[in-house]
Image (cartoon, rainbow, N blue to C red):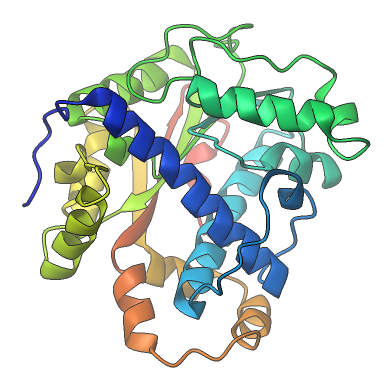
Length: 307
């Protein structure tokens, strides 16, 4: 492997590079939404439409990511009848809160965690948007020390109730943390909440040549994947949960997730843009995965959730 689990020497440069991935992902999502891959009327408040065209395989990858995470999340919300809370780790410019509001699926509590600069930027956008976003914010959003993605959460104001079923979501977050830090976070989550589910989307199969090229490309931008050793395979992805107190864990690469999505909607999506290089799409999808783990002391049936 080209990288180790040690922290980069210049943490400020590293943090800035990680923060940059928020804008990269948001621009890709904004373009995909503009083409019609999925609906998100709120993203335009946070992200301008990119001038350049994004490759179809990138948009299809984001489609699978958004649809896969949403299916698992919706199953959790229905299983708990929304009597639960969501903690969105590394939320960036995500518009999940408003999506759930529109679908009448808002949980009792909803937390977003990210770098203070990103959280502040998002709050500023919400407060200045009239009338699109601000009425839903209730002026209760504020950054805190919990808006840091590298390490165990130190505080959340107000703190998440431990007895409320809890869904934690992390999309391309843990790989930017050392295995020691991500294990600490996962152990904290499994030991804190009586009933919980963790959805993790990130890289996998990173030990092959394609994975190494991905690592090298990000390294050239000072973005070091310090947690990449846990992303060697689906088995190492599952092991990280089983060794930190979680009772069940499932893991699929994104090609498998893609095959589990509703066929009618996939057919609609595939008709939006012609895809010339299907092999590249398959390679990309085989190097990302969706993992979900559960711990369910009250026996709510969380282990039955799947795609």
